[in-house]
Structures are given as structure tokens and as C-alpha cells.
Image (cartoon, rainbow, N blue to C red; front, side, top):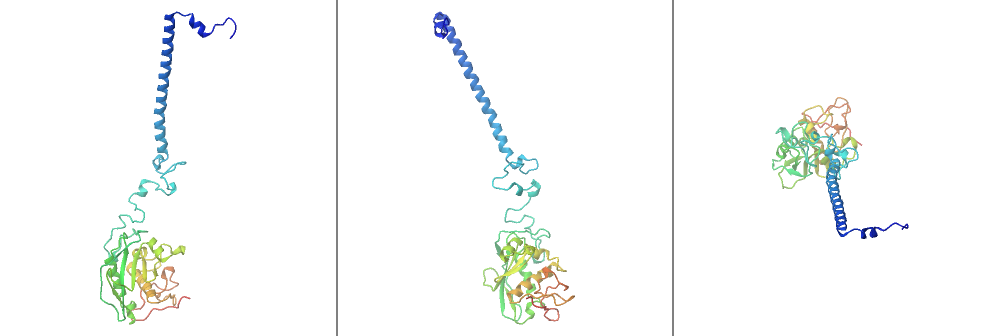
Length: 309
């Protein structure tokens, strides 16, 4: 301390008792004001933090973007790729839950074959099937192969109506029963069968048929073991390669795949302008032949073609 400068303590000691009390009161008041200001500042800061946190959570949600999709740098729905989210509310309105068709697609039209409304073919379903309860009389002269139809749930196709449609195809005199070696009989749910006819959505068909050829994904039918798998899309819409009614194309599907069940192999076009064999893969093109759904013609002649190597 420089010489001649008294300390603060020494200065206080020269104050009288009254002056000292006033000085103490001023100090206490000063401390109170500082404390109050600090409390006010903390409260103001806390109030400001809450709205910022809320605003941050909104910016990370789908609603933060005016278009309804997550904006740049936002996370969107947790665990979901923002690009996979619907682009707008209208894009998802009325859409189906995963694995289920839309409500419109699941309404049967009541038409022949139990088909759903045209243009509303469900692309996928739950992979579970409902069996027809109908049973019928033996058809044909050969030993009756018992069969049942099962329809994927939610497909919009009525199993009993579809069973009647397939039974009519198998019992047609142009069908396989024209050969006296063959016979069929429709049986209901729970009864033993020799083969099953399943009508399945395109996605389920691809799984059951193990489709790997890109151009056939979602488009084809098959026989898997003792199961004839009918693609719902083809059942409802036919094929662009087939010139004829949808009901005729259904006959081609059934006759072709049941032909495989009977041990028949693929055949190809016998010549330009001639009927395509039922065992020809007509969905791949007709090669100059005319579309045809039946193994035999009206005169009982088998409509054959060269075997496919």
C-alpha cells in the first residue's frame, strides 16, 4: 500500500455508528438488487429456451416442410427414409395398410368369376387364403382328380364364384376331359385333394412361383408342386397378348397350368395363322399363331404344337 493511503478498514473506523449503519443498509440493498436481477435474468432465459426446443422438434417432423415431406436436413419419421414417405396427404389417402389392398380394391363386383372392380387389382396381400365351400360332381370319363380353389384374402375375389368358374372351364368339352384319361371333381374346404388352384395377388404369386425373370415379375402364373397359382392380375385383366374376353383368358390360364399338373410340357406355335396350343406360353408372344384357350377344338382334335426343347 502506498504511503499516506489509508486502508478501507481504517476509513470505516473513522465513521460514526450512525454512518456505519447507513453504509451497511446500502450494501444490503445493493446485494438484494443484484440478486433480484439475477433471478429475473434466469427466468427470462428459461422462458426463451422452451419455445426454441419446441420449434426444433417441429422442424424435424414431416409437417415442417410446406410440401408435407421432410425438408433438407430433417429426419422425417424415425426409421423411415424421407424419400419413401407420401409426397402429399392426397397421395396416401385411401391407401392400403402394408400387406393389405385398399378398401375399393377389396369390394367384389359380383361379376363372373368373382372378380373385383376393373382397374383396381391389388398388387399384394397378406399371403393367407380362403377356400371355397362348394363341391361338385365328377367330370370326364377318367379317374376324378379332386381339386379345390383357394383365394387370397383381401383380393376382392369370391372363392365360391371363382370355384364355379374354374369348374365350368375344366368341364368344357374343349378342355382336358375330352381325353378319356382325365377327370376332375371340385371339393370343398377341409377335404383331401390331388391339387389346389390358388388365386393370388401378383406379389404373392411371384413368391409362390419363385419368379426371378424381370419381365415376368408380377405378370405370370405357374404350377408349384401340386398347386396351380393363378395371378390375380391376369385373372381380372387378361393379357395384352391374348385377343379375346377375360373369361377366355382365364380358361387359358387354367387349361395351361392344369395341363402341367397332368404331366404336359410346353409346346410352341405350329405355324402362322394356326391356333396356339393351350400348352404354349402365349404371354410371351404368339409367334404368328392365333390366341387360343383350349386344348381341343370343337371337333375333338387336339391343338398341338412342336415341343419346346
